[in-house]
Structures are given as structure tokens and as C-alpha cells.
Length: 212
Image 1 (cartoon, helix red, strand yellow):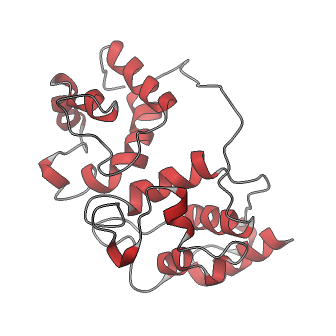
Image 2 (tube, one colour):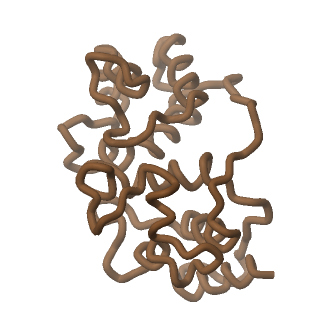
């Protein structure tokens, strides 16, 4: 029942969908696989809520840091959630505001108790790895706020295939996400991305890094 209440509140706040289109998360939201990558990619990049700058005193690169902006069981009074729906846009431009689905995910996780949960699966699907269907979503999650925007940080631009291919060819894409020297560790000031995602990118590279 509380999930329906979450969704109803979200519809009121966002005011961009009709009641007939309502959906809800019926299973437990997994923090490590669903929430942490979303917050890392949108809020914990350089110059924001990372261990170095700690804007407003928050480090959103780990569970303990994120929990400081959360009241478990009460998404409506959680600083993390209220900042995302406030008129003062968070994440700030040029980053996009969270979509309704992302807001619903965050709200549901908080309402479920904001647990440091992990999905119990060892399956890494590498059966059909492509740039558009496999690699791009990973880059969007972990690199989007820095390198898939106008004026990308460090002028490292991943928006087009030709731009991305520069870092593929020089080895910095895979070297950075594997935390290998001499490349800068990426995501910057954050944890290494999941091993399955690294494996998927490596397979795409091994198959020729095609624009598929």
C-alpha cells in the first residue's frame, strides 16, 4: 500500500503523468545495483558530492555518505529526495533532472528502509554485447554527468562514437575504469564500477569496439 502512496505523491509533485500510467516497484530496490550507480553518476562527480569537494557536507560515493541525506522510511522528509524535486534543480544544469522513474526508484528505496541491499545474482549477461544496448547504458550511469554533456569535464567527450573511439584507441577508457596506471581512475573520486560492467565493456572492445 505504501508504494501506491509513494507513487501518488510523485504524480502530484512531478505533474507530468496521468494516473492511468502509474507503475510501482513491487520488489525490493537493490541499493548496490540500482541506487548507488544512479547517485554516483548524477551527484558524486568532480565538483559535487564526492570525497574531495563534499559540497554541502555530503559524500555520495558510498552508502554511509548517502544515508546522511536520508530518513529511512520517510522519503518525503529525506534531503536526498526533496533536493531532487525542488525548484532549485538538482542535479544542476547542464545535467538533466531525474526522470519520474528515477525519482520513484529513490523514493521506493527510502520508503523500504533505505537498506544497503545487494541483488543476489551472479549472472552477468554477455550474450549480445553492443555499443548502443550494453556499453552506452553503462557509460550513461557512471560517466554521463561528466562526459556525456555539453562542456564535458577535461574535454573528454563520449557523446558520439568518433569521440568515444579516441579514448578506446588510446586505451584510456578501459584503463581508467579498471583503475590501471598510468590512467586516471574513473569515475573520479568514486568506487570502481561493477566487475560485470567492466567485463561487458572489455568484450565490446575485444570484438572490435564496433558502432553497433
